[in-house]
Length: 244
Image 1 (cartoon, rainbow, N blue to C red):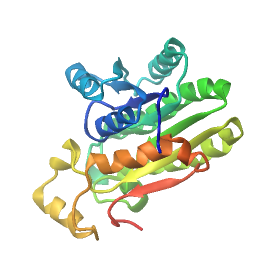
Image 2: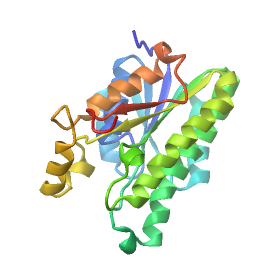
Image 3: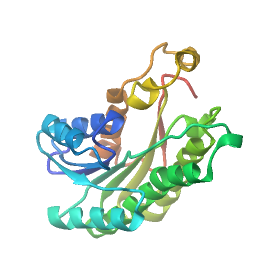
Image 4: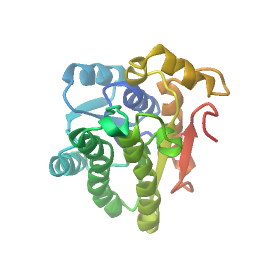
């Protein structure tokens, strides 16, 4: 099951955290993985080595024109693009009255507009092939909200609407579009939280532990596979019961 041999998968934000786990898991199932990274080439190369059959691609998703061009060029060079995992994301936490417009704009540019731009380019290739998988990495915060994360929550909630809309637009072309909403996952982003914030979040998780990037990657592999061919427009929650 979940055999991805011969498939080309592009993972934006693939050099670290959840993105890296997704890249490694897809490669383990036989996919040729393209690891998108913004600036840390060393981390991207390290991830590529861990994947084995992989390559790296510098892509700043906040520059939508450049992001579209990079995705289109990659698909043309490799002859196909079967799976896009839009994992690139940033967070700048602040209570609304302290939230700067520049930070709000930057979050939306990366988390939302960047994902949409990459999808636009991927869909053009997938339409010709009459098949494809697009998977957005959203967040439990986009479903339930969180203090100090208005901008981040807005960007992640918007992805859920994008996934549903694109799923309806391109289902007739054999393209599925879904979202995964991770909960409290052990990553660089969550490790930087104050201890009291971590304790509070963990207390809201019925399974009693934080998730791992591998937990999320398993869901992504499923959605990328042929076994998920009849799944589209859905939000797959990987949150330990934090939000039901």
